[in-house]
Length: 166
Image 1 (cartoon, rainbow, N blue to C red):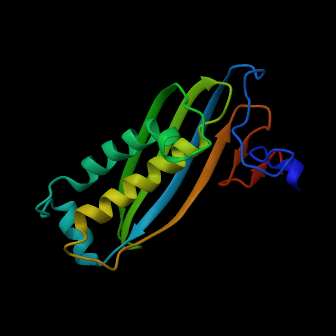
Image 2 (cartoon, one colour):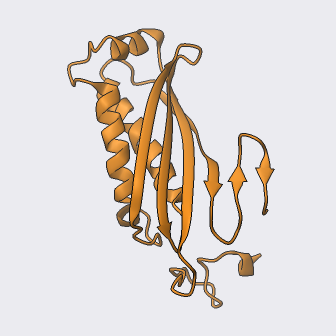
Image 3 (cartoon, helix red, strand yellow):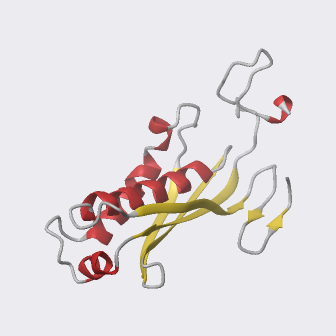
């Protein structure tokens, strides 16, 4: 199994993967997640009743900023020239709460899965930060990679169960 772990050197030490020989390819990653909260908290967010301001707008920008800073946060991530980041947050009264989706694109030697996951994580943490005065019991959950396209390991889609590689 150790030979399958690309960030582990032959002596067992963590290392950054050398991607210099890989060709540049178009890459896309989408991640999703959610934050559950009291119905009244969701209503306050949607009605812009929180003192900190536009919760969903600030969370969206925080997610974009986080995607751009991923290599500063995750020790062995490569700095990647991101070509596009889209973060969307939508109310889901059935949770009740907010669902988040981030889509990140690049043309490069390595994928943007970590950037998409980081965008979702920070966007949801921002929702928590801005609404915690009303509801400290909010729960962030279900953060996962939904789709990955491009690169040598093939495509992945959680939504349709299509995994071209293990």
